[in-house]
Image (tube, rainbow, N blue to C red; front, side, top):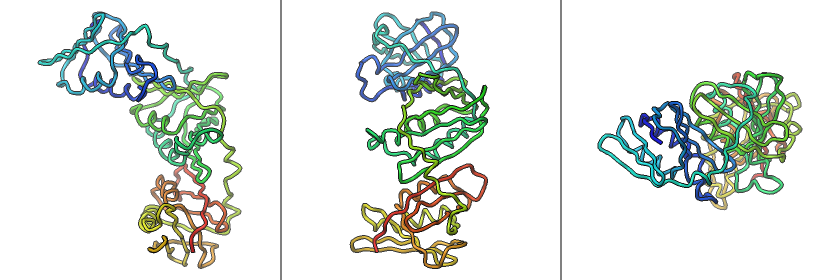
Length: 372
């Protein structure tokens, strides 16, 4: 096999495909990248049984073929080469990488042992890549940490992606937070599908696909693979089965609220982070509404702290007190850049959080019992 390819394109593709190599592969050959050259195209594939990534780039392919080469080593080597054309030449044992003034020889892994790569189903529809990535980022922090999402709560470590006509809805929850975000998309037919993908996996996929439009493939009936593809990058990922709660039943209604308080979300988040440093492991903060401002306070076994932020309230009695986990509060506020409205009920009932602009994002946050 012989290939001539641009160094920058090769290094970028190798680095990207290496994301889909397991840190500790159970099969040695899965530490490699599968390179397939033919018809002036080079594809570079990474695979860890749950996820596969394929990068495609233009190349001169005077001699076609397929090889498997140590993945992260290839990414490191190609990244160090000068900005020039790179020649890849493979024989039975090694891959020789040549650039002006540079030559590396890399051992080949047994291609016959490389497993068949999964194929994603046909695209269900198309969304804007940047908007999809933003939506995933907005909800991902509300998912349960992977180390905790085991057994009966495994589904809480995922993001539920649901297609409803010309709208996609992304939702995540860890039982203390719920975050959901919608975005428009163009379905290729009647769309009423749902899939669940591990939050860190989907977040990594969404931010790495590149710019433009992303084709999204929901699993076929009885299948477990979903797909995300742009012009030159494709990811097939195994979905999770069940375990995601019917969160719609847990969302409080704005019209049932006692009233609301409005804040600058950045100011409220900064205040919560500031005082929480004295709250030890609990990181609990107490918010007391006082007409045109809110007192944000925290108390540890000895130290205490308080600060004040501007607010506007409606329907809420002066002196209303509610407590939150500061980390959870700041994460659900992070996607909101304009003013935020927090619908309040009682100090022990979940609150509904909405941006005052047209951002299609909502969150629910469970209060905590605070130290007096």
